[in-house]
Picture 1: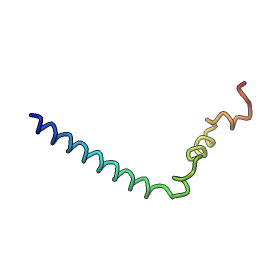
Picture 2 (picture 1 turned 135 degrees about the vertical axis):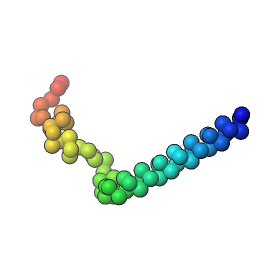
Picture 3 (picture 1 turned 120 degrees about the horizontal axis):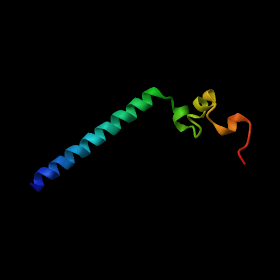
Picture 4 (picture 1 turned 90 degrees about the horizontal axis):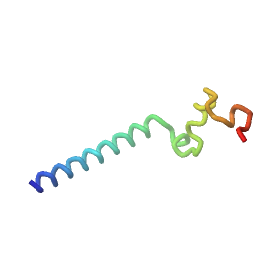
Length: 61
């Protein structure tokens, strides 16, 4: 019984590794290095919709 659970755990581990590698390849193809290394990624999309408090011009304090 424990041997089957051990094999199942290894299978889940291998599946997660494969999923992470595939996701890393997909993200690397979808975004350029400049965007991935930026500490402000996503801010541009928020500014387009006005969802960033700093973009509204007022302070909340």
